[in-house]
Length: 339
Image 1 (cartoon, one colour):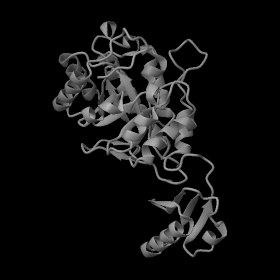
Image 2 (cartoon, one colour; image 1 turned 135 degrees about the horizontal axis):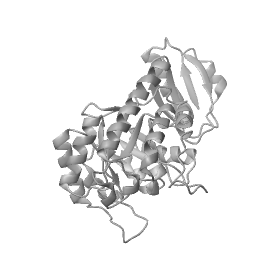
Image 3 (cartoon, rainbow, N blue to C red; image 1 turned 120 degrees about the horizontal axis):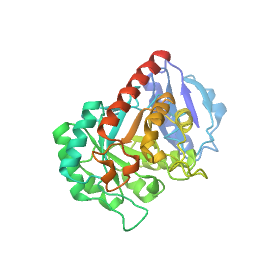
Image 4 (cartoon, rainbow, N blue to C red; image 1 turned 120 degrees about the vertical axis):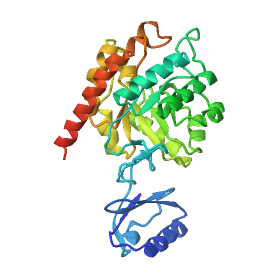
């Protein structure tokens, strides 16, 4: 249930009203103060809440029951977009376009530093790279693990780019203390024990959509993190498994506006994993910007033909330069059209 308060509500009135609700109905009341209104979200068993009593209160503008099972991630509870700001100043969800770029796997210090410098020069705002790699085959390269994390931190020191990398287990959380954004991969989207632990830390979490999960299931996974107290969640559409075989996955770009209607969380798109083909990354990146995505995650490798993982979907630095130029130009035009 959500309650929208009148614009002239005073702070003391709000405090007294919240206390009355919590005492009267034994529920939790969350408050979101927006630009144009203040919204109260009632969480718990609201079946006994008397809507007539609430509507009779002088400070109440409207009240409605919420059918969706997610509350904290629900735009009805939080009308304004969530903006995630890093200590280094980068923002996600503020209307700008962020780009997370880098290799699928960190392979060496020379490789990650070279790629980091090139993607930064092209306009990337974050460095992505895999230290721990979940692979379908147990015989495939699994990443450099802790050494890979150290190499990412070294590249951050060289370029100043915040780092984004994937966590595989809650047992590794302490190892990720120095990571700027922790990524939860598609295979772990419903690893609820991991999500619960990530809800206890004060660090942005990038949550990728599962291989065959619905949008509601995806948002519910975000709810697990937020229920633990961590509201810094970024959703990432990376394609879902369908019957189509022309691409690695089917990129569901309709998910971007749908999620933005349902939730206040920022949404980015990963065209590399979605298509599995480097020649499709440019078109899908442009389409993602047009769909309203807050950012892109693009794989860039200095030598894709010899990459230890996912070389077929990786751009060369020169190719990334061109894609970045076009997506920033489109973003500028998109913003002008929507003014």
